[in-house]
Length: 140
Image (tube, rainbow, N blue to C red):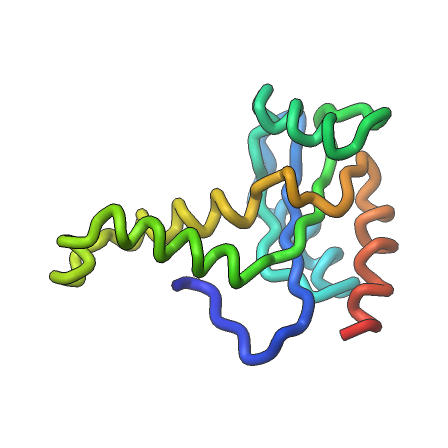
């Protein structure tokens, strides 16, 4: 497991949907801005695929689901552990010999983290993300 937390604070991840590929500096600017506002584990550029667009449209009817935009998701460590165990059962022989590639763990974690049916917020405004995260930080 790549994420380890000591307590049960609400931790969030942010999906950044951009019109063009972001530079590392641009992504770092978003990360810094969001991390100041809340308990952020991951800020990642994500492709707004047609499947992701459909899921977000169902989750947030009436919103213009397009790039640029941001989605806020709560990091659910229990779901990540559960999905990791499913993957380990799938590769039970590799698990016995401790030979499951780290990439497999990363794929499961990323897929679970950015499962948009659990998104808490979709917005086109970075400041709205900050405003959403600030009260969450105070509650922790």
